[in-house]
Image (tube, rainbow, N blue to C red; front, top):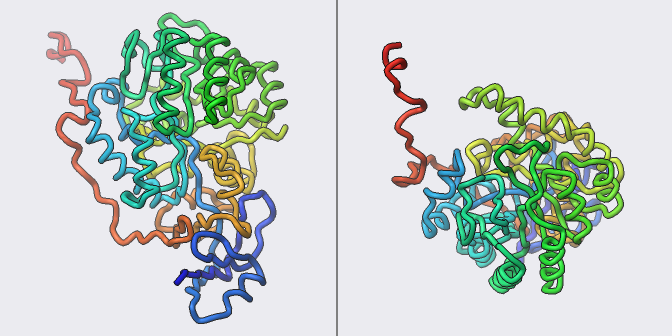
Length: 442
């Protein structure tokens, strides 16, 4: 017998950007059967579970458009690349996926993963072996030998951590075909990176336009979209002209890049949560003041650009880069909404749309999830509070009265327990400094 649930007396934020309304929702099996008076009428029977949401908010589940669920919160690239074993990474990623779900995230995009674990975790969740949100995933990020953001830790060829280094067109073609054969939802490219003695603002382009076009054309021929990590104007322009489907970061755009983004309406995932956390809370974890100011400046220098493209109708998606020590799982999935409101100047309602309807693009489920409408899959939060008055209520897990995924309520019967990392999993430096005689005398 199919299970029906009526959520009544709550205020609905439907994710489309329209004004909230007080009405009921009827969930039948995995989807939203009806809303409003139709829901009340159809639910007039004894076989319906009824939830009284008086004084609460009903909204779509959050969709985080940029997570790294296989990284397990490293504090450095060294830890990420050299302290993660493949099988153990998969087991721990499954544990962390539950943390994300319990924080009200019913879907997320993981654009690249260690050891290509993402595809298998996605399929394990789909099959019911593991509890977690809906996932769309990439395999290993494609890098050139110049590297990405990890500098000389990236080798000139081969595989390291999440990165597959491709040296020429033949290697690009082989790797794109391999990943698509293995079932990825996205091909990810590290379009820009950091190099020694760099003088450009942001990062430098490390792929040619012809190489980007090759990836996009090949992936599209095989029915797979492409996403790029980009932090400079040239990279944004090259990606859009090459046909890229979504861009992560997209900071430091010039006017030509802004015009192209606005013309094509290419979805952008700014992913400011990492920077905002370092800027606001870095002191509490030992980050230097210089480091904090650098990250604050990236937000300050780009907020007006994102406001401009948002006002022009470009879809901005909320992504948090959860998976690092600065952005641990289950903690900061509301934070990008807060940054969009405080720094980009969105209303709370607009930011919620960016984390629901817009973000559904990142999991390739537009018109299936992300809004509360008849016929949509029932990924729903019931929040004890009003995120239109205080968006941070979405970061308080005690305020998430009910979480529905695919029409089924998530039973959070056990708290996520603290664990002791396996031996060798975390960095264990000898010290935080160099013990010279002068230091010893002090």
